[in-house]
Amino acid sequence: MEQRRLEQVTDFFDEFVKDFSTFDGEVIASRYRVPYQAVNAKGDIALFKTRTDIACYFQSVLNDYYQSGSRSCRYHQLDVKTVSDMCVLATVSWVLYSEQGRELSRWRESYMIWVDGSELSILSSVDH
Figure 1 (cartoon, one colour):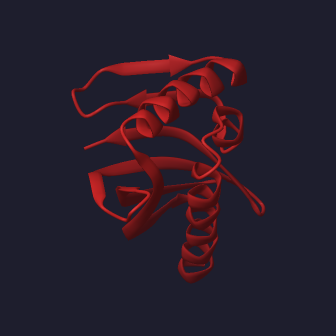
Figure 2 (spheres, one colour; figure 1 turned 135 degrees about the horizontal axis):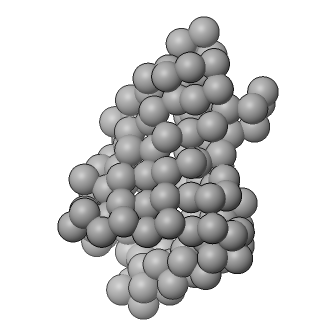
């Protein structure tokens, strides 16, 4: 079970990286479950109650990333813990890169991910 979950979550984040390159908030929002709760590195909590709210939030974040020169992202140090048959806790380290491949930013983030068969969606995330 653990290996299967790890493969599922790895595939999920591999697709997330591809989605990121679109810089489209709607595309990113499709990976999140409504409602979605986010906690940033400063401890600020935001609750998004609609898909539109999630898409607007991520469009704003993506716009900021793009304006700062980011053109791609990668993740590493994936750690997955099964919470239940329907939920996993995944933690990754993210790195944003410029068009030339220069590292612009890095952070660690944990995600509570809902598992519905082969479909995964993020319930909440915490930056740290």
